[in-house]
Image 1 (spheres, helix red, strand yellow):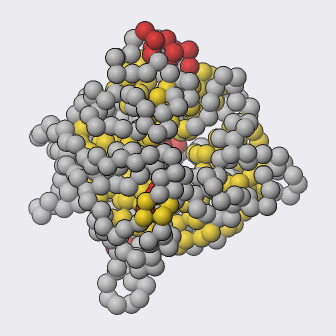
Image 2: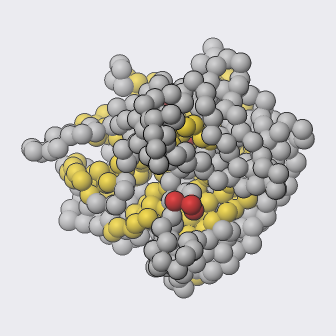
Length: 512
């Protein structure tokens, strides 16, 4: 498998006879055909404040969407030719993705072998509503919304409720709730169980979510005990890759979770069984000092080791070893002190295995596990914003969610330093760290009309860049070649996700 493509080897279930039945993710809407350009459309403009916002959950939400029919003009294929896996759009416009039988569709499964499908969803948490939205990335339409806990009718502050989401290679999502819960939702409704045996699966199909306990695509939900009742709830969550990605039936992936535990100021890391939500391993991270937020975000590498960044006093980078069972204090984990002058907020991993972190004061740096060395790009960013940035940029910025695309280009959400309640010139940074000198571009409100508060970044199956706008209650789908060409999904409610919400980062590190 090429680790730089957004695709998943799906579990191919053993069917009747010698062959394997093939699972194909449903995908509504029209996929990119290259026949039309991307139209620019404004989305929802509802705003809220970072200072103790309380919003009551409701069961309806309006969604402003637009259909994109052009793939970006970048290479998204497995080789330099830019070819992509074959897809097809059904006659009724459903845009279903067909299984491919390319060079990766080989293996021991009767006459079949693993099939390759394209991801088609981005999962964005609506924090103050206590829900998560499933958005079809190909036509920018919300195709499901789900309560992550029994939040109906409750008021949630802007630092509570669901935040980080993580998507596995089957397309399913785990949602970590800062109120102390972890939930898994099944992406494909055809795989959701008919729990009440009434002959039909009850699940949301748009922004109108079902009452808690009624949506049958909720696979499981567990409590995550944590310290405090304020803004220090659990945040860092990340799926692992399956251990046998070339087998007929994939083993169930597992889930890393890190949080400030309920007993003291240390951190607890869990390895959770992805099939049923049971905690398989518990690893204490001693002497952590969870003075504020604790583990703020996490990624996995090609070994399935878990890397998470600290948002408390120390702001170190931590690595937790996959497959390790702790016996003595200090077992199974190590930490790396943050470089002087840097800040830790967002985290991602690129296809080479480098761990990238970003934060306030134009802080951007990476850690190379092979050399155990940090490298900073902060001075280059300071120079760019002082001398070369467009007029709608700030001299000093807090860099938040970030992701490296297939070409190794970094896309980073940016707000003004201190602009937690809004602030001037939110936008999107594009950085190519492989050029000499590095290439930097900034796209602010002039390009991204209506943007209010950039938070998270993800990359979808076609190579489009997604930007979550918290105070705008919306998400942008941008052409990476021309970010002015974009569509907007509105109707979200305080969306606050800046993790691997499409599964792209995980797909990059899968061995192939």
